[in-house]
Length: 220
Image (cartoon, rainbow, N blue to C red; front, side, top):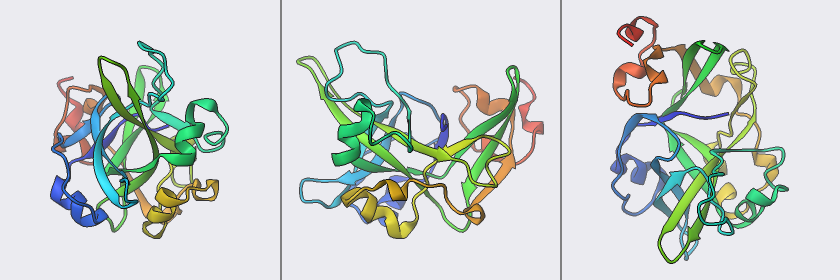
């Protein structure tokens, strides 16, 4: 799964990398948690890339008011079949930019966090889905991150990982979709390091969280 990630790059970097117009203001973070408003890249009405802020945890357009079911991840193996994701998979795909993500290994109460970042790049582009829900009182634009089976490098830590799209598949995902894109990335495209357990607390948010080593966990 993917339950925490980082996006500490600024809006101009996103605009340049993804070739979009202006990026809405957002909070850069070394510890993004579910229910956070985050930038995603999607297609506008003219089928061009745009950056929008969406809340992490998908609320489909047909959800009942007050529903607490808000999945932060969708499995690649079933995303095109499950009613919860089927409409978005066909029509409302997005890219979720990240500088890296976290995963944990170990038993409950004794889990070691790891940080996974791209090799030779600034961003991961996760495959995502977005949707728009509205009522007379509010409007919610939200998203989920698609996960797939882990590659060889990731599998000792966790059995799953985000779908990380190659740069030459970004437009194909946005315009056409296709389950053939929802595979794990090559082993040599990710780097994994042990990091401090300080990341376990959602209130902690600083560059220290992604520094290699366990020693920064003191004082929890």
